[in-house]
Length: 387
Image 1: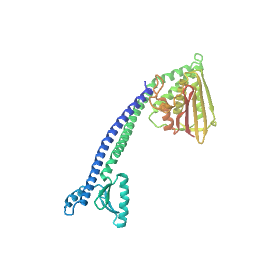
Image 2: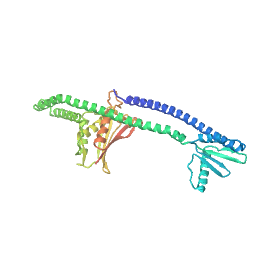
Image 3: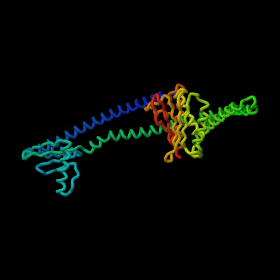
Image 4: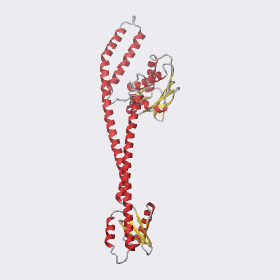
């Protein structure tokens, strides 16, 4: 039996996969942030070594040869942007500077202020006054900061595309299975249906023995079976729409259903569509949608209650509301009721509303949805069709 539990299980699997992905992403971010923190510490230590070597060069006696040592330290830093400021004068390393001297000073001053907001400057006392070294992180460090985010986004996009492809392939396979099953069912029904039609014609030959009303009702049921068989055999092909007097068909079909459901169901049809108004529909498929909604309503009321059908037009749209006084549907399930396999019945297949929604929205370019529902009070389904 297919039921709402199937979708709960699927949701649990999806949540489990999501939690695993979140754990993997968390571990990835932790590892990457650890590398970033190590690189940041290494770069700060390199800048401090640069500052200490500069301070040593400034404070060493003139005769001390520090050039070799200082050149080696300076050459080590090939990526970290550094600005040395002393009494309003600026010198920079690993920064592209303007060629104009005036623009260069303003540019480096602004850059120093930007660096100061990220890292406190390192003070250098060369004996003749204090200087400051401002620094930022290397381009490699900046790239590494964005790398995990870009990597995660890439994985999410790839995973999403793979999920869409897998879902489309699975739905296509399921559709082929259902189409094959439907056509085989139609084929199997053909033989006994032909026999029933023969019996109906036989009954008509002896009206004295078989009541005419009885024969006519049986004939209606046989015609109904023929319609159902035609629906099954046409599944998988694109249905054709023809202008039909929709309101008249609905009223006739309701009269047919009244005789075949509980007599304790009170039917109330309110038709506000003008007589003879033609609306493009596939009659067989549309009648099946109405039948499905009405039978669901009868089941929800457990054979006792009121079933209301309201038809009207507004702004180029045709509206049909089918309301019952049954058990109602919790708001959290208003969309789930259209999922394949979702059913609250013990022996329900959960396919009726799914097919009904597909017929209305995919073939008739309309809408089918739960307009209102309250547990214990009833449900209203609304169909909208372009006029």
